[in-house]
Image (cartoon, rainbow, N blue to C red; front, side, top):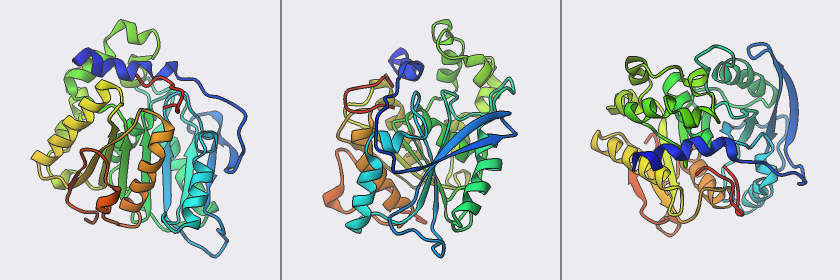
Length: 312
């Protein structure tokens, strides 16, 4: 069982991306001083957005093998336009940074600083350019697959920056699982695990363990939304269900659901809409919208491989 859980994470680098799609997002090249690199990000603004409007800001972290064009590539930009026209989606500015296959981490070896780049450089830049509402009250982080891992780590490592965190189909390891993953030679042939996460040092890994760090409502400053698919990778299903159970046992308010579908963008799309309504519009999900095996605790304040239906 443990091997199936951990192998889900290793396969992230095997995902590819396609080309040839209609561009709806605004694509912005940027020079990052913290990363010492030329990078990019993309931005979705709702139809009719203008210079006088101030909206919440959503940081969206893509999965492994994807890029800032994910929403355009998989048709979510057009879907969101339609959702706004039908009045079923809260208005927000959503931005998508370039994360490569870096797990959205400040790498242990210091060579890449994705967290610092996003929070210290890019977030203020986007907030100014699109005149969004102030953080943390109106700033949110979401992610899918590898991006779900990154979203949870940002909520853990940068408390007080985001009002909410939404993680779809992400790996959520405890200390023992992370130690096994980082020290596995097979996975290291695909992912530079020691460069990213550091060597398998139990004390350090324990400091980054959500199961240990989020042990009471006071430990979790952001509203939490978790989701995974009925046909998700077996490891992903097990990890998320276990983490939700961990939060329930410690009376940590959160929303968790098992949606009907696979590990891919087509099935993530409606869940992302629900997450935005739950986190930004503070809506309770109507019974008719609830999917398979949903658990709703509290209220808002109160193989990762490509498939023919989408990528992660």
